[in-house]
Image 1 (cartoon, helix red, strand yellow):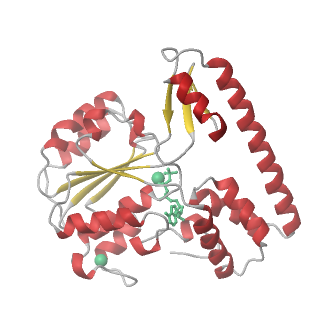
Image 2: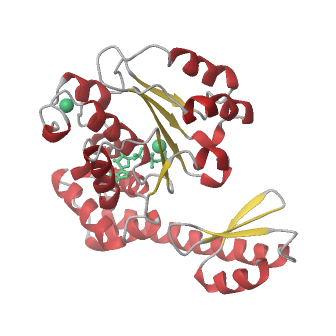
Image 3: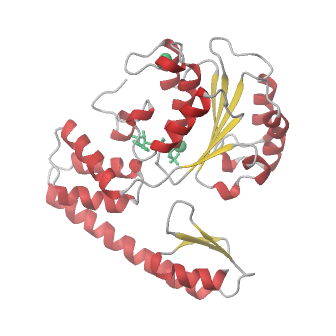
Length: 303
Ligand SMILES: Nc1ncnc2c1ncn2[C@@H]1O[C@H](COP(=O)(O)OP(=O)(O)OP(=O)(O)O)[C@@H](O)[C@H]1O
Ligand SMILES: [Mg+2]
Ligand SMILES: [Zn+2]
């Protein structure tokens, strides 16, 4: 499946919990719940872009459906279920991309189809990716089945924007908040990949990549892709530096904007980003991102 022309982010997609970085607790919790025979009706995975939501959704599907059973999960040599799930073509695992299939017709079809038991595995699994894009009616059509699904049916929702998911849905799911990947962990990760790819990238450049990625593994790998393709490393470093400066200017601009636009708590609503320090401010149809420096200001002004 992998070859040299594949982009790094796909070539290195984690296929089991051991290959994921930064989300150790999630794997552990999921294993334990299965061990104790307490598999929830639905999992909800949330976190910023490129931190492993889609990958984890497929890994959960494998853990639940591996032919060797939960105690002897496939590692490298995949059984037919694990193989098919990894390649997204298992007959009992449906991935709905809610970004392009957000209508109630799409979800009704799923519900209709859920009446039939799985053909070749223990569980039929619906993975609804980018689920915050689902329409109101689409969510409504899922509620009843989500509450009382047939025993063989499991849902996995993934989203970058948990705040757009109806609370009635959130409360029916086992929720996992994926964290941003810590800088040193991300650095080690892309350094190892650089070595595997026999690339020549300086530590200085790798550090810049990590900084630009803001904790997203996919972003780091995409930047590394560009770095490895470029024949002259100094140019990559220069480009990364320029991008970094641009980014800082951009943040400054939005900070100023946010400061100007936020007047009273009822005019705007401010939220602290779940995973860490970055507060997001919503107002006048825009989403602003501010940095630590004005987090205190936001907290006191936005309430
Ligand atoms: N925690 C992680 N450990 C290792 N690699 C990761 C991790 N998260 C993401 N990646 C890399 O980034 C790629 C994209 O990951 P994935 O599709 O799982 O992210 P996502 O959270 O679903 O992103 P998005 O929000 O954009 O849908 C993977 O193929 C993999 O190469
Ligand atoms: Mg995804
Ligand atoms: Zn297997």
